[in-house]
Image (cartoon, rainbow, N blue to C red; front, side, top):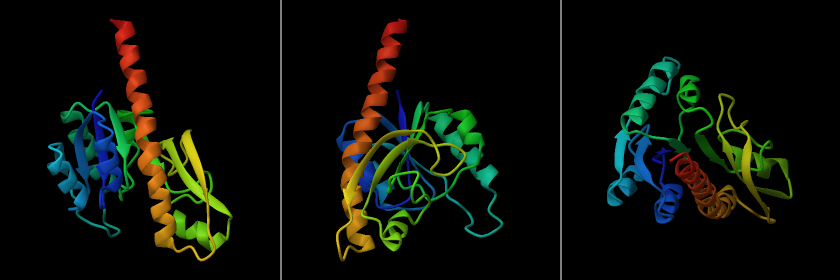
Length: 192
């Protein structure tokens, strides 16, 4: 099984996946970012599928086709989203049905979207956490594979809470992906 990791930022979750020795064959980014440097350092192939526009003229479907082409060219079986900042069009879910996994910094179905940590603090809830789920065309809606909660402390900031959630993500996400890889390998062995 070959995994692609899609990232847009610092790559701390990518680093956890690398350290877990998952079979990562490709890292895709939508912009120049530290995640690409982490991939280079780990001698993992990279593809910068640069997003040309962040305005209303952005062609999401054409961009999605470029991402699909890069994934298929690398022989990717499973896609792991790790802070990828571009929402992709429906075609990717047809190309990789139930094979796109995402990690999200909340206990879904609560606090969907890009500002989940801020939203949890603003709502004044007692706990939040991390969810690993199958990505679908509806943002942060797919079947949940794993969750872990943590309390929100008095005086917590977005930065401190997000870092505590990332600590969970860096442990939980690799474990879930390892389970999917092992399950796939077992199915392959049974079919031989």
